[in-house]
Image 1 (cartoon, rainbow, N blue to C red):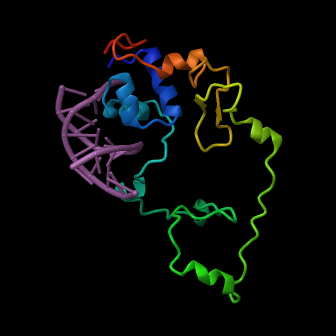
Image 2: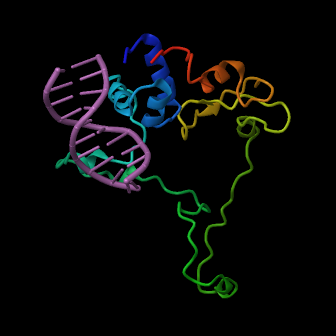
Image 3: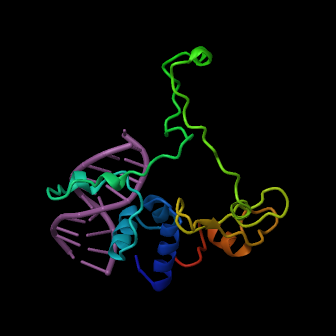
Length: 170
DNA sequence: CCCTGATTCGC
DNA sequence: GCGAATCAGG
């Protein structure tokens, strides 16, 4: 792999968009090892990995701080939405159980609503910008080309022909 | 076994 | 610097 400036740029872009290393590799015509190796070498921010290094490289010194875990917002179910072990019919007669937090759920601010592209009428580009899950994550939201979910600029990146790719002739 | 990302180490 | 091999967890 010839890591030209443009190739690195593309790697950075795809990496920032949260693609898996294998997916990036597929898009750029390289192995995922090449991708992850280069990303590591570039000091790109490590994305949430299924593996924590605590297990790999034992670090005897510091144990994980208690502050590592953020409190879950009230009213939201934990990740697994499994069926309760108790029959739902009992719910009406649950006198002893303290009522859970009312889950106040504030009305969404207009700015928040505007952050999402409108699907109904004027379609806007839904190309992701920034790190998903972070506060500054957003969508491109430029005017999408008719019939496509992306603007012309991002459509050119999204749809890559198998032959005649933009940058790599790999 | 499929997937994931991270590190190692010969080149 | 590169990336396959390897590791390790889901």
